[in-house]
Image 1 (tube, helix red, strand yellow):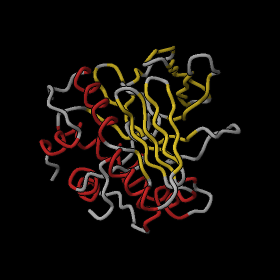
Image 2 (image 1 turned 30 degrees about the vertical axis):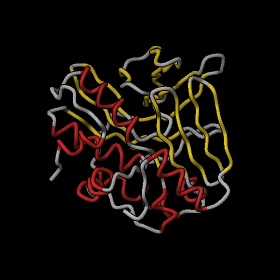
Image 3 (image 1 turned 60 degrees about the vertical axis):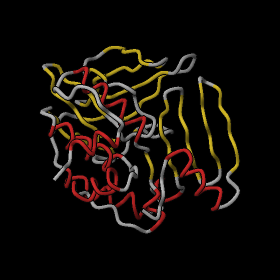
Length: 251
C-alpha cells in the first residue's frame, strides 16, 4: 500500500492535497527538486521491476531516484491516491539525428482537470510545471514549450532562449497500464544500443538550476552559470552521490 504521508515527506511537500491545478503544479515541482532521474541500478545489475510496491520501496523508503517508468509510474499512483484523474501515456523520444523512438520508449502522464495537463517527472530534463495539452506556445522558466499535432500524434517541442526549437517526444492519448511498458523497460536495462546501458547518469533540478553526475563529470548549473568538475574515481563518485543527491547505494 502506498503511504501518502511518507511519499509527501520524501518530496518535502507540506502544501494542499486537494486535486487542483495548483496542487498538481506544486507536487510536480517538489518531485523534480527532490527525486533524481538516475539509471544506477542498471549498472549495478539490479533488475528494475515495474511494480508499484517495489517502486515505492526504492524511491520513498530507500530515497533513490529512477527513470521514466519508475518515476512517472509511482507519481501517477500518488496523484490517484490524492484524487486526481491520471492516465499513463506512451511516447517515442526524439532522436538527435531526426525521427522518434518506438512506442513505450517513454512514459508520461496526462491529468484531467477539466482541461488536460501533461505531467512528467521522469524525463531527466523536464518542464518544471505541467504543460497544458493545447496547441500553441507556453513559457516556463526561460523556455518555450509548444504542443503540435502531426500524423495523428501530439508532439511536444521546446526552445531555449536564443536557440532553435527541438522536439522532445511524440505521443497519443491512448491509455496504458504500467505493465505495458515492461518490454521496453527490459530493453533499456539490457541492450547495448540503449543509452541507459552506456553510461551512468544522475541528475536533479534545483531551485536555481540543475546538478548532473555522469561517470566522469559533475556539472552544477546555478543561475545560468555552469561549473564542471572531473570525477576521478569511484570514491569521488560515491561522495558526489551522497552530497548532491542524498543517495547511498548500500541502502
